[in-house]
Image (cartoon, rainbow, N blue to C red; front, side, top):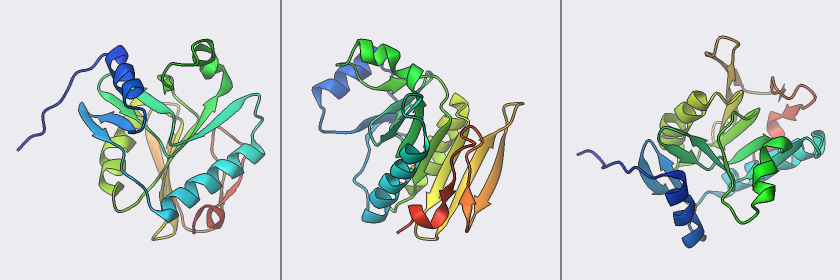
Length: 187
């Protein structure tokens, strides 16, 4: 049985989000869904990653969001990443309209998802592909139970190379001054 897809304009989606602010609405491949509640390991790791990124990035150049921003693939997807690094210049339109929904269309330097039992399949199958289609520079899927991270890094030709980190540190390709110790973002 197939799940019916919906077609919403950006204005309709923003209206839905603003009228129901307590529910984290996403659209993945045309399917409206509420982002589920997360585990302690998921939340802890996301916040640790955010703190490490904020400590190492120039805040006049980058904004780090956790479970708030929506990344839009103009075709059929609005997703809420667990952690995303956003160039501050991409927030100019939102600063001019502070009551609007935080939606970004342009590629970002880093987006990270933490796998959890409630979201694992859809993070890999839905969100990962949406991030690649958006052209996001680097995408991390953190596996807290297995204690490793998979990174997809965009190449100049638009394809992605895959890298698995099981120990040590990782430096995002678009953020060369940042070094993240894997153990620090795992419980």
